[in-house]
Length: 328
Image (tube, rainbow, N blue to C red):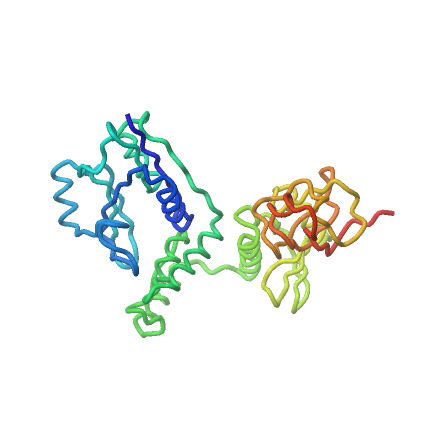
């Protein structure tokens, strides 16, 4: 009996690229072409990436009981449907298969073919990286769908633009009516939400915890971020991002975000790769990082290498320190 290797992941996680690479390296794995009602993208061919069909054709398959799983996505262009159809493409008595989809489609396929016949492969990528990939992909299209990309990455959003003209009278009216439904934040809440949003963007979902509820700011150009009399970070006006201070580094260390562990006493403002014992694999060059020795924060600074490179390189600078604990 053959097996179905089922690859899944969120949009722009890279699963399509990995899927194509596996097909190239393991041609003995048979594949299944899904059905969709969405428009064909630039470079796609009917019957290769998908069978591009109408709602009426999917309804016919449903009446015949051949739909294994069906997903509907509400987009700014209307409902897009994706379906796996029992159309004779799969014969587990003779072959192994490689399939691609979502967690929901995997569950439905498992129910149809049996748990013992499916092997799940889940691709997980940080949300920030997925969004950047999606934007780059849309830039390559003749008619980029940036609005739809944003919809996929925002938990809640309301579109007020009419006919692609955000400043038209109808669009402005829709925006005004929508804003009337929302409670206005006071200035304090507005500033707090802004600071937390920047931290989330820079350090991920848990990064908002860098900004406590009692936070205060000082400065007109570069803003000092202060809590309990200690400066946590500096909000750089030129980049719109935080530069960590030691107190902020303590918070990120407790959250296990952008941590670089070393095994030597930090006495200079340079951390060389050979002295790095372990580093967060989410770190990329120019990230703000926290340098830790024996579970104590000893410095904060800017990454020169990725987290993986810090662990693997036998020479070169891993981190440039901006603030460090001075030994007496």
